[in-house]
Amino acid sequence: MKIENTKAQMRKGVLEFCILSILNNGDAYTSEILETLKEAEMIVVEGTIYPLLTRLKNAGLLTYRWEESTSGPPRKYYVLTENGGMFLKELSKTWNNLINSVSQVTSKKSTTNE
Image (cartoon, rainbow, N blue to C red; front, side):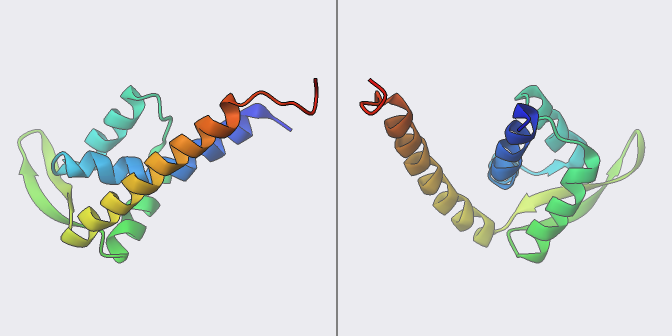
């Protein structure tokens, strides 16, 4: 089993949560979302993010608006909806519970191997 595959799956599992969190801080276009994820060392390519943004939009968690750009074509800015905000709050609770649970399990010393 390759560790890189497992790492990639772990990142993919939290990608929706990360994108919604980014949009909770303000509207953003795809390049800004990608840059924020890359700065956080969440390695994501455009081919991954576009289908995910579409899925989140179709689920009613975000919407978008077009805005003219001074340096090129109009940009599609993604906006968190009210439902998206409520969904994010639930994900945040789940994330915090998961962090606590995983920390509890991984910090315990195994008594079966001693």
